[in-house]
Length: 109
Image 1 (tube, rainbow, N blue to C red):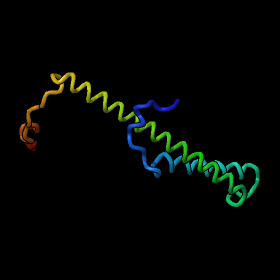
Image 2 (image 1 turned 90 degrees about the horizontal axis):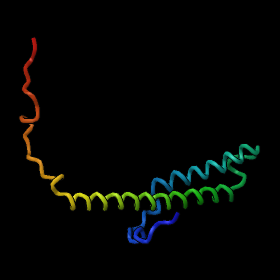
Image 3 (image 1 turned 45 degrees about the horizontal axis):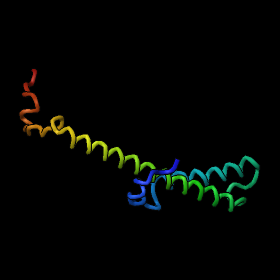
Image 4 (image 1 turned 60 degrees about the vertical axis):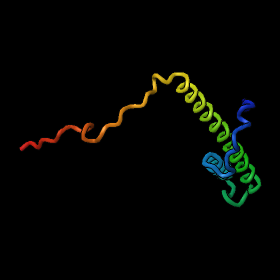
């Protein structure tokens, strides 16, 4: 399930990204829910478990972001290659003015 070697050439994502923040918060909420289900104080007991779950969520979010960036980079590369190989399908379109695009306006009264 690891990334291929060509993914290692991409720049690493930032430490703080959307996936890491959401999954880190989800891990922390999971630890608080576990405390609540076991009838313990939600915030004050098992702080080490809260930190562990938040760290695991952050780690998973970081690697999910890495996979996401690799997937988008691969798709961009494939599309660019296709456009380069088939230029006849991607000709420059003639520029139109707005008067040519819009229909004439005739008020109805």
